[in-house]
Length: 117
Image (cartoon, rainbow, N blue to C red; front, side, top):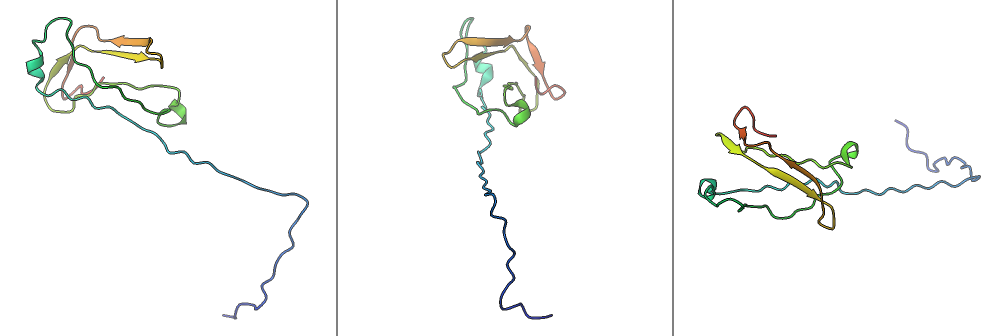
């Protein structure tokens, strides 16, 4: 192997134009809200018109570019067994006005074959 040259060769640059670049990197925001009801069997007798509700939460602009304009909401059974549930999802705008409501038709059964909706 030959030794490195003492004076490295420098190529001439074209100075007719200047080039620059920049880059902004934003952190991807993914989020979820887990709402746990401990002792659910005790809550069955709450009475008509009484209900439990999760706390408020915020999530960023979707998981990737393809769904940045959409919201995904679902129910999932996290433990083995069978549960019957009626549910309602309400999405609100920043002023608190409800802009979309989805509610179950009666009771939906979740079990090991059907874990989410």
